[in-house]
Structures are given as structure tokens and as C-alpha cells.
Amino acid sequence: MRETVKNRCEILFLYDVKWANPNGDPMDENKPRLDEQTDTLFVTDVRLKRTVRDYLEEKYGETLWVTSKEVLTPEKRMKDLGIQSKDDAVEKCIDVRLFGAVLPTKGKGATETSLTGPVQFRYGRSLHRVRWEYIQGTAAFVSREGAEQRSFREEYVIPYSLIAFYGIVNQNSAKYSGLTYNDVDKLMEGLWIGTKNLITRSKMEHNPRLLVRIDYKEGVNYHIGELDYLIELVSDKEDELIRDVTDFSIEIGELVSAVNRVREKIQSIEYRKDERLSLLLNGVPTDVEKSFTDLEVREMRWSD
Image (cartoon, rainbow, N blue to C red; front, side, top):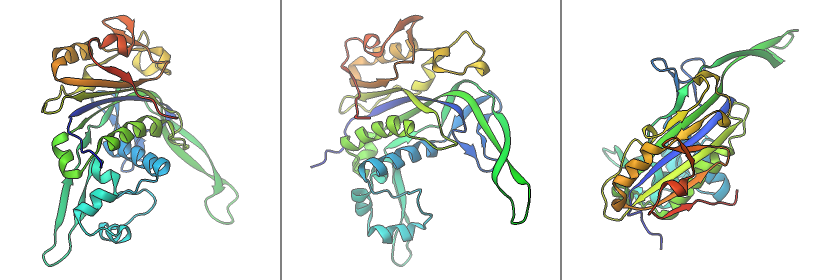
């Protein structure tokens, strides 16, 4: 029997991109999404969820409510999956259990059934200022039959960006979506390995660097919040000149202090860290297990 999640969980996920477009805006020439006030990059939660969905479908053969392979109406998707009710959707689709869904209902006066997903991510943001580069190149084919000159292609890429996502697993919503601990474990795997597996022309060189999961004790209806604002990128280089993970360190002193203040509420901390990422605790090189003392801390491992 699958056990429904009963513990609140916070997630901090850092990954970087090199000479790629992590999340183009189709309404603006597919340019990378920039906050014009701060010159920082942002990535939508939809892009991150797509990464997880695609990985879980490919690796585990999971059935998805939202698929990238076809453009379907909700009614057609329900018919294809043989879904008659919310319970059917929860049972069959891992992304419904994770992220929720809006399901059409049948019958006279039918409306929609909204199921709030227990897993929610805020938009990801770069931890430093970035600039995009505009690149022109020659297309592989001519634009029309009979033409002698190939057309040109245009694209926008980010030379380098370290992106931080913050998320919450809400145990209060989990009891309605049927989210299980196994689902959450697969989510974490999908974040790390799914990001590493983004090997397309526009998404090449996405590398996961740090993943932290804080599990609170059962019955604790609390979370620290804004974990991505409790870390800081520290570098001797100007933000826009950063080109590699070795060009900076991540200061986690404020995060560690926030965790220590509520340690009695926390059950465990799980993490995965890329060996090339340098961490600082109040300016001193450290690692995750040394930083969070007197707490159960363990490394997440997968056969990747």
C-alpha cells in the first residue's frame, strides 16, 4: 500500500547553463527571460515541471496527464487515459499527484474540478546578473524551393547562469492528491538527473549543482521559506563575466542559521552536490554534512 505524504518538505535546487537558452519567451522572439530591473535571468516553474515529467515518463514509464508529445484537449486526454473521475486521474498520473490538474467534468451543467498540486515551485532566478548574446547563423536549408541562398537563423543564448529554484511539498494538499513518499523520491531524482539529461541543441549544458530537501516532522505545519534567498553567490569576477562553476562559491551561512533556529521541527535533510561546486559557511570552505550538525543528514543517490 502506498503511504501518503504526511511531512512538509522544502526544496532548494541549483543548476547552471552554458551557452544555452534555458527558457525562451515565445512572445518575445524566444529570448531568455530577463528581469529588466535587476538584469537577472528567470525560468518558469512550467519549464522545471516539464523536465521532471519527461524524465519520469522516459525512465519509469509513468503515465502523464500533461504530455509534451501531443496537443490535446482535456476531454480527449481523459478519454485516451480512460479517466472517469478525479480518483482515476490521481491513481493513473504521477504529475497529477505531484502538480495537480484541472479536470473537466461530465454531465449537465458540467464545469471543472481543480486539484491543487502539493508540489509548488516559484520561478527560478539566477543568483547573479547576466547578459544574453545574440547570434546569427546560416540555416541548413533554403527558405523555398528554387532559391539559391540559404536563409539565416537567429538565436539568443546565455553564456553562463547559475539558477536557483525554491519549492514546497505541502502535506495538507498531499492527502487530496494522493502524493506518496515514493512520488517525492522520484521528483527529486527527476530534478537532478532530468536536468542533466536535457541534451537538445537549445538546452545543452544544463548541469545540476546542488539539491537540498528539508523534511519536517509529522504534524509540523511550518516551513522556513525563501531558501533561495538565504544563499549568496560569492565571486571575484564581475557577475556578467562568470563562465563556470569554478568562478564562484555559494555562501550558505544564512541558510544554516535559519535551519538551526528551527532544528526541533526538522526530521532530516537530504542533499546531492556536484563535486565542482564550492560551499562556504561564513566565509570558510565547508560541505553539507559538516554544516548541518546534530541533524540527520544523508546524501541522495541514484543509479545515474
